[in-house]
Length: 257
Image (tube, rainbow, N blue to C red; front, side, top):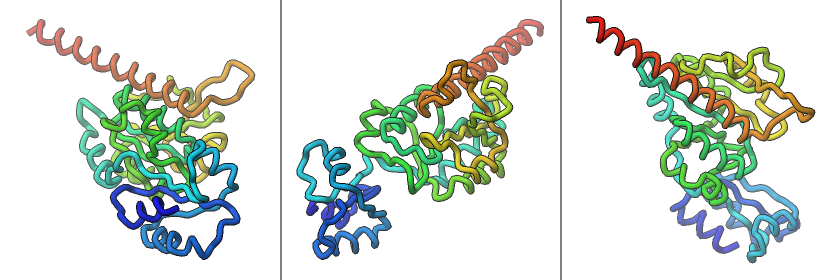
């Protein structure tokens, strides 16, 4: 418990969330609660078995803190940087995650997004995985290159994209458009929902378009990190073809002069 209190007191690294074992003595936790409240860090209770699993055998003393393994970028600044590329030869491509809670999924998505040339990734401030050591490990170094920002309100973030002529495209199993039929050469933000629940209703309703990945088997959904890879590499394919076509046209025009 003392290391968590010191982490909150020092403020050198971002504490995402504090988890306290159910039944812990409230009197011993008073300082921790006060420090967490002052820092805006959510505190939740969980069964001791869950803390034991997360701690992987380490002596947690009934308290575990999720600490950011990397610094977040300012969301407003990142949005403006994306908007500055609208109308250029390099239209922005962003990823927004609406409630992905599994840190391994988050890390895998960050890794895939960086490999696909995504410009930025946004995660919600609450009820979602943060940039923990587990995420950093799964991202395999991608956190060093891909800007990750936290959105206080994902639905509002969608509106900000739309105001700046960036298409907000969500994934939904019941969408009428297949992901290959969408024009990913445009400025786009891909929105992916959390495990199981998908995009929240308010977020889904504010998207400009919804696309689906066709399912041919008996299972009706994909892991969110796999879905991210499928859609993002369709964007890579379309953008690569568009660049090659533009280059070919420029070369032909030059030869005809």
